[in-house]
Image (cartoon, rainbow, N blue to C red; front, top):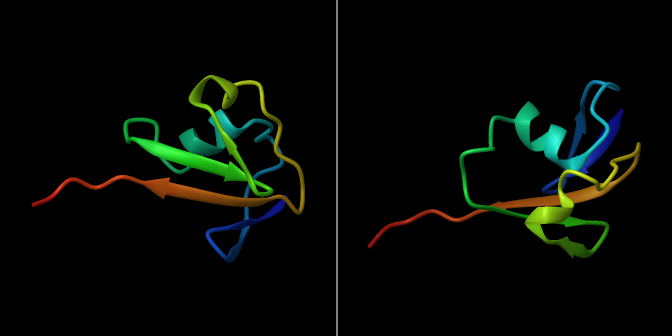
Length: 67
């Protein structure tokens, strides 16, 4: 399946069906992350139930601490 993630065309396994599975695929589950799918920001509770499909446009934004 091809997705556009943060502006880059990325191929991921077809077995990934939800946003949460995508987050796990990229090992981002332990990070504070905001997900936008097709110009809609998802709440964290929606990650598990929101389906991803070929051609989706996603933004995965991580918060990084610093000072």
